[in-house]
Image (cartoon, rainbow, N blue to C red):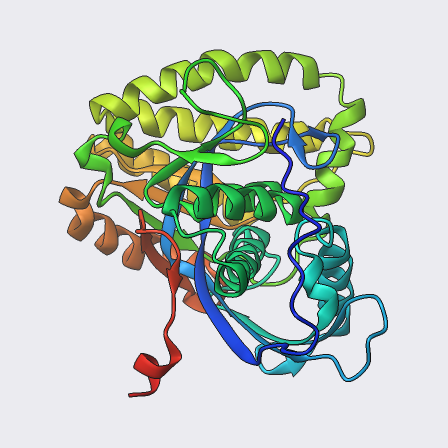
Length: 369
């Protein structure tokens, strides 16, 4: 078990710095789904995801000396330039839990500004992008203050660990391409405490693989993912699900290695439907799909049967539909979306996305030049 507790990470009280850090961190789409947890944000099964490029969160943390030396977290929070007390309370609670890891947080006045490129809490893993962005900012602050995370591997592992404590899926957003979270003998170095990148295990064909996100509903979903995970504790199908994922992971790694788009798509669709079946068999049961979600799924299956092209769908914990396909059929698929699918989307909304290059630290001086 890894332990990042470090009481020595305290600033010289006579020389508290002033500055800011900025990270852009992406959401990710889990192909093998994480659903059900134990302990402190530990998964009941491994999960494997695609890191996205255009669905992201930008987060700025400005820091300065506290005006007083009272214990506790002192921060202000703005979401899309507006104060948000609900998010502020969640971040304070999260930062308080991180004090054994980053004790210097109690020494600083923090001003946090955050915003998404996509609708929040609609089932596009906004917690993955937002919590990973926060974790990256905190690890950058530690490295700036103490020089403790100069090696990229050490930085990424700690950022993934810290992101996991805010949102399990956020652990995977630290890495480009595809990432796996959860200990398994099938991937060397895998852990329940942080994610690892697939790296060379990902076939070249997946490096420009597309995920066009059809926004069926942009509003906040009726049941949070946190609540959904909790309901797995009593779900009668949970043990079977956790056992099933071992075989699914084996098959998924094989198709990723071979560049098998058909095999990949079949697993993605089966996992999406399994996730929502688990929601519908929880106690109490609930439904996050919309009639237009089902209409899009039907259209995609009809298109695939007619064209024989490897267009597949996935779902996260919400009503919006992810369309998965390789680069070589983009023109046909985009025409199909425009003619057949956008009418099922809220105000014709769609995010054109693809497998991404991972988080990016933003240099404000360069941005402003």
